[in-house]
Image (cartoon, rainbow, N blue to C red; front, side, top):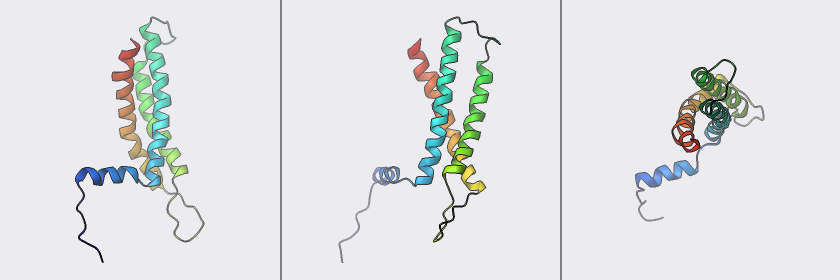
Length: 129
C-alpha cells in the first residue's frame, strides 16, 4: 500500500492539534475570552481613573472589582458555554444540554480569567502609565 508512516515531532503534533481543535472547546474558550476582555477593559478604565486622581464614589475598590471580575468570568463563561455547546446527539436532530457543557465552560474560564488579568495588569497597564 504505502511506505512506512513518518513519525511526527512533538511540535508538529501540537501544531496540528491547535489548528484542528474541537469546536466545543473553541466555543468555550471564546465565550470566556470575550467576557474576560470586556471586564478587564472596565477594570483598566477604573484603575487608570484612580491613578490619575479621580474621586470615585466608594474610594479604591480595585480588590472588590477583581473578585467580581473572576466570579463573573467563571459564571458567565459557564452559562454561555452551556447554551452554545450542545451535547453530541448522534443521529437525531434533538439538541441536548447538560451540566457537562457548563463544566467545560468553567474549566475553560479559569485560565482565561487569569491570563487576561495578567496581560491587563502587567503589560497594558504599565504602557498607559
